[in-house]
Image (tube, rainbow, N blue to C red; front, side, top):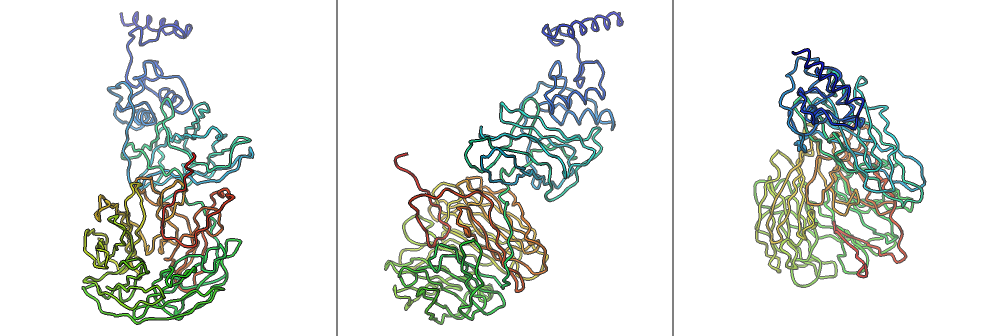
Length: 630
């Protein structure tokens, strides 16, 4: 009887093969085994090959479809290929269940992600290579990565696996879906005995892309995507299936230019001091006793720095102090405030004012070693004022003098100015010890604490804070801090992102841990997607770190660009559009002996408008220019 049944099944299968348009085995209610993807009534290597072809090569689907869902999970994908492989070659559990396929929703795992190198491109019908990078802290057994290119002007012509960190014995495949603007990239070893070990960032492959002839100049960026029929965006790891975090654009495509000038750079600002439409860089050192200005050049580089003042560890502010049309510089040391009044032609009239060194609280020594200063309008006279560590507000009279002052009933380490309660009056956010505090101004310089947030949950001797920006796009002021150590090499710095509620409070906060020393922040729209990103320099690894904002104030783990080898630490940076192409660049410095470094963005230039608006000074302002006529 059994032989007769098998003979019947064989005849039916032969008929199906001869008449592919006729009824399927599932429609005829023939028996099937879970995991028997190719329908040969055995579970073996043929099923592994069959499923691999189905997922990565557009091969025929299992019949019935659920026969291929060997791991009993969601959709038929790479996980099922490895599940059957484990059963055959590694005495893994047998396929069972095989439910009807459904959409997958794998979770992410911190430290495991995919990122792409941003590439500018002009539509001249030539091909360029876009690197795809993998970061993983667990062993990966296989990858399945679908990409979607939303522009019809873009075409992915091929995938290059040369130089890939994927093991050489992995099968590497690419499935192109041009009508859906998709490509699926895969890599796996069958029988699944070779893994991709943990690594911080390695080249996975390169996508060769071109913009079709006549297409507009653009910035190439790709979305992660599911690619039909089984191409989930996933890693199969030794601990389970995960969806890797995806950074759409690496935001780290910079040319690193080493200047011929060495410098001790600790506090740093940028502005167009000499009004020649080129970015100038102002800095003071941690050990050297001078304030320098490196003036910008038309080619996007900097002139040899000029020494203007003998000061050490001087915090800086750049603003219109005496209310003329040129930007001035304010430098705060531990005992004085120096005013460099810009008289034009790169000349300054210099004055100073002794400030009180009194302080309050157990951490007063921190702000006495590393002072802080910020400018704003704290009373109702429309003249620029200054708030300085450790606990003073100095009120300006519009002539460059600050004849009156207030001693605040609290001390602080670092300070930034912004209108946190949206009442038209400048408030302050400060750091002190392991916390950040928002103080609301009553319009006369009287400050009342509204919010406290713990920031430095690791030991540190230095903190920075930036306020006055909207990270989440809700029209409310947010702030970002970083804490770290100025001495030692075994350090972990902490970045804290705090989203404001518009009333002086905080709706939510998040932290990023930086393994290494990071002391300064910069905020700029690095990837030019109309929201501000966070940039830092890791002094320990000598790397530029950038974490890109998703538009809602969420930031993934930062991606890294090497700043070259060296024994001296780099810890100061400022964003500046050095080559005036509309994309943020960075100026980076550190301990005495380091060359000043320029990180020049490779994003293509913005078009030059016939009527140009020139901004001579700004402080983390988000500006949108809209055409009311559409």
